[in-house]
Length: 272
Image 1 (cartoon, one colour):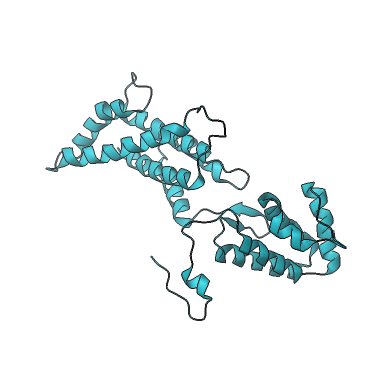
Image 2 (image 1 turned 180 degrees about the vertical axis):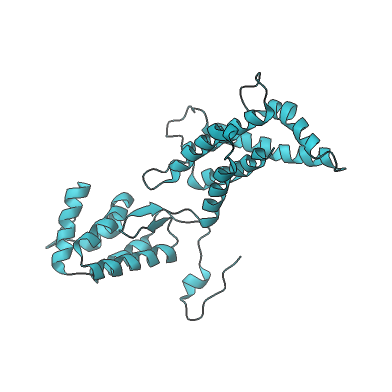
């Protein structure tokens, strides 16, 4: 649902909204620089410079003194996010809380794909609906026969954790979870993988029997399975190697869409 404009809010925050979360933002960097400049003492800021050098192993810009106005807007995004964690360690409790509160607000207002924990650690942000879907899907795989599927899904979701973010691994893991549940449901020892032929030959009869009391059962099942087979096909490019001269990675938004659809089919299979 579209959020209503807030009274007294800045125009760009009311009406200029990004369609998706951003990995980086020059505006956010400049705002964090301003917040940094207004927080703590010069001594705390210099201790922070030493922490950056010692913990991140990079040079800090210097022009007649530490050039903070060059560091924050231009450093690597991983160093920028790590610096946000390092600075509060040199501050008083009150100043640290103020700085982190300000950064949280900047992340939200500039639509960045990160969130802060209470200790200043930066993590990838997942929307609440995706988290709820993942939790519900894991809970739906509680039956012992879906143990392998649940394990695969749990492993897949670990690719969205604070330490690593891997879209291709997410797609692969969710596919494995769905395939495992599919093989359990059709219960055919001769079938070793999930593909269009196996879906039509073995899953379709099960679903037709499930909806036998409905006059349009055949059409309903065929439409459902068409979507299922399309999802299976869409996941294949990220499940195999590719002859490319670059890393074959799945964009995060593509991976999240595939995982969301896959978990929907997984929940459906779990009650088959």
